[in-house]
Image (spheres, rainbow, N blue to C red):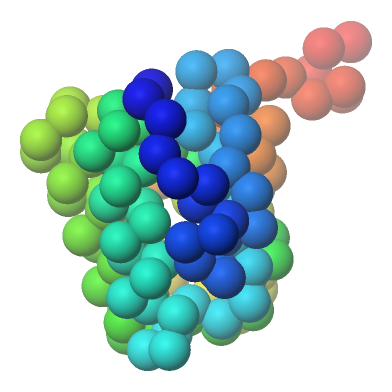
Length: 129
C-alpha cells in the first residue's frame, strides 16, 4: 500500500490505521454522522486509492451511525469491490450499530465480524488450543 498523509490527521473519526495480516485496519471512533462524514469519506477513499484493497473498519469505538455514515460505508464497499476486487469487513460493531444494520437490511450486505482478530483471520486463543 502506498503512503498517504497520516489518516488520523485527516479525519477526527479515524483513531488509527495499521496493517494486520494483509489488511488495512482502520480504527474508527465517535459518531459517524453528517458532521464527521465528509472528512471520513475522503480519508477512506484516499486509503483505497493508495492501494488498500482489504479494509477492516473497526467499529468498536463508534456509538452512532446516521444515514450519512451508512452511505459512506456503502460507497467504500462498492469502490473496493467493484474497482479493486477487494473486500471491506466491519469489525466489532456496537449493539446500536448492529441494530441499525439489521433494521436497514444492510447486515446482510456487509461482511460483519465480532472482532478485528476474526476479521483478519487470526485464531483466538480458544480456537488455537
